[in-house]
Length: 195
Image: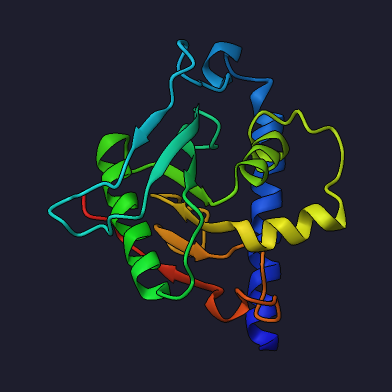
């Protein structure tokens, strides 16, 4: 358990350092390239009960709410994805569905894509303001951190050379093994999506 906590802390430090690097690098690039794209017509990409050959469960819906281009140090894409409220009664199916959605989004966007999955819109918006457009302007509160632990379902870093693996999948990345309800699902693994 101590080793897992140390690994989580190391990863958090890496993510914070890369975020600082990305933020400082922002001023050097063309501002038009780093502006968050949220389709100019305010459309969001929706997929209701994706049925890729019947392999994604019928009650797993997702919506790409925010897309940020060229924010990663390697000019990759960041996606903020909202899922319907998750059912932890069938965690294997949930995590399988997340991998299938990753496959679909990587094919649609590019291998250099980071994807964060949420099942609560308020937490997604908070995370976007904290790391996406950097508009939060304050630290998160303890109550917000508890919400983040429960509702940031997964994070995927595709083709990112500075992460633990080239393609890294985090399950409940804001939680740790002692977090009620979700702690037993916290994990980090290499996941190479189908391209």
